Image (cartoon, rainbow, N blue to C red; front, top):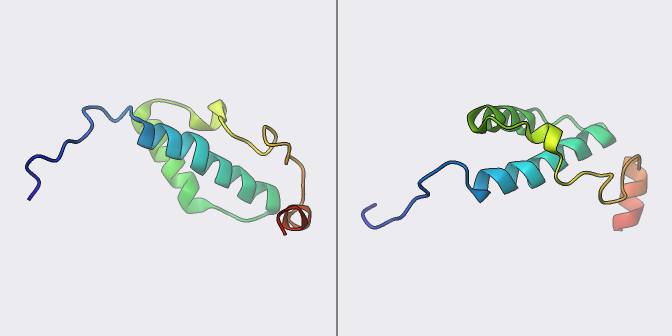
Length: 82
């Protein structure tokens, strides 16, 4: 069943780096900004950061500030996206 399926030879691949570094970090920060807890995302960020020996939170590839959305309330974001 799995013969011939090629897996990455290293965990240091874009799935972790992009999904955590750009996706989960952004969503976690967005949740914090609008008062929505993201404990499961935060746990995954912590685990992957430990496995990869990288501080994805510190790297902050994509943030609310880099998208000029920093400091906006949930209501302001809702109006912007409506």
